[in-house]
Amino acid sequence: MSLNDGKAGMQGLDKEKINKIIHEASKGSKFYENEKRKDERVQERVCEMKRDLAKFTETDKKKAIVESDKLLKELEDEFDFTRTICHVDMDAFYAAVEMRDDPKLKDVPMAVGGNDMLSTSNYLARKFGVRAAMPGFIAKKLCPNLVIVSSHFDKYRAVSAEIREIFKEYDPNFSPMSLDEAYLDLTEYLVTNCEELTLKVDENDTRCLAEIVVEEIRTRIHDKTQLTASAGIAPNLMLSKICSDFNKPNGQYYLQPNKEMVVNFIQDLPIRKVFGIGRVTEQMLQALGVTHVKDLLAQRDILYLLFSTTTFAYFMRVALGISGNRIMHDDRKSMSVERTFHNQQDKDQLLKICNSLCQELANDLKKESLQIRNITLKYKLSSFVTKTRSKSIPYSICKAEELFRFSKEILLHEIQEFQKEGKRFELRLMGVRGAHFYDKKQSSSLKQNVVEDFFTAKYSEISPVKQGGACAGPSTKADDKLVPCPVCGALQSNANLDALNSHIDACLTKQTIKEIVKEQDLIEAKTQKSSPAKSTVSSGKRKSNEQLKKKESKKSKNTLHSFWNK
Image 1: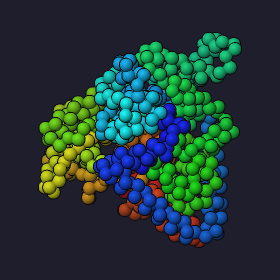
Image 2: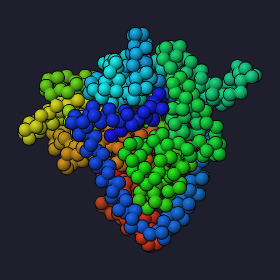
Image 3: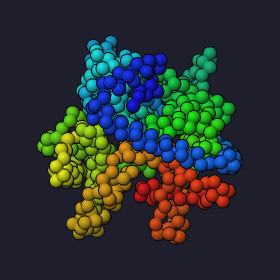
Image 4: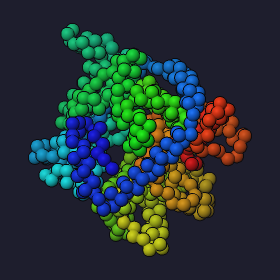
């Protein structure tokens, strides 16, 4: 349990001193115990990984190098510099909105959230080590003068809507990742307006048109909202996100679209800077001597032997700076809202929170003209353990009262189960997620066809969610496993299922879906039971050339079905 100082505004801090304060302030708390459990699980994986590593011979490693180099050569064909992708990220968004509306907050260290958890902090607070996803009581120890302001999501959504109106003018199909960040593909805009833009440019301005356009976007955001935004401009999604963090706050970074510039840029980055490599993956890689992106190539033999095929391929793409550069929208899997609050165990208050979340989700669904056929209730106990429960619905819904009816049923069921076991059902976070989208025409047809089935167990069963899908079986903690994205192979924690879904939505494309479905059909023709792909460490049985070949034969088994059915 230590400070992640990768956030903008947190460079040059005394990490040792801050980590000591965090440790002392949190020791004995529920937060501390939960973090301790997670760290222990990571260490178990690291130990298992090292045991497997000790079994491999030099011959195994040499063969792994050969196979790795084959893959790297194939990946060379994936370099694509035809698109101009921009990632816009608002600076300390929630805190910035609060400071704008209350100027007295501008000159003091402040954060948004509560004593249990912070959503964000301003740059003054970050100098003390205060950051998002940190409990407020720990932040107060780091910065005794910290001012903590309650969240006002209605305001944040309103400001976000204003910003998105600007985005639409440059990319009608922009992809919002959250209230405060979005990807824009500026390629068409630049081509269409090239002549007009060129005429506007000062002859002494050496910047490219993309840089000028992005600065224009950021200026318009500031003029309209009095808030600043940072941006990254690059040939693909991954690189643009990394670049947007380079000149924060209120800056932008342009990465030239050529192979040499991209490879040189990515090599010296700490691995944690890469989207998809979080705290757990970082710890596992560090145990193997991988601290920077260039180490992924240097240690590729070990990574090849220890990690699954998809995960290894992802690491190699990262090492080369390769990522998707198409922003897709029609493959979206879910829409969700959630809220953190002070520990609450009163049933009426919990139902009130649930109802409010359903109202928010209904508004979001209405804006997108979407309806759902699956609803998930996510909750975090006061012990910081996160669980999710899913319920299938026999027809499409979108109204708040319908969403609440099913969410309420799940919530009351969970309360009852806890009471049966003599446990206290005390929450600090709740979320509602809708999935399995259908349009209105499909909805009316489905509602007519399956209304009788609504009363069967098939649709009334409430199931624990495992890695984003409903499944029967014992209750699972959402932060128990590290799973690879079925598309790019990035290791993802399932502690935040919505973040996991967002990642998959961002990198999934129509072509990938077609390939996976085709692949799954071939597999199902051979076997009725799909084989789940490994997410972290292999079994250590690759000591011969024959066994290395076996690994290659397994490459086709990483499918969407196996991913969701793990």
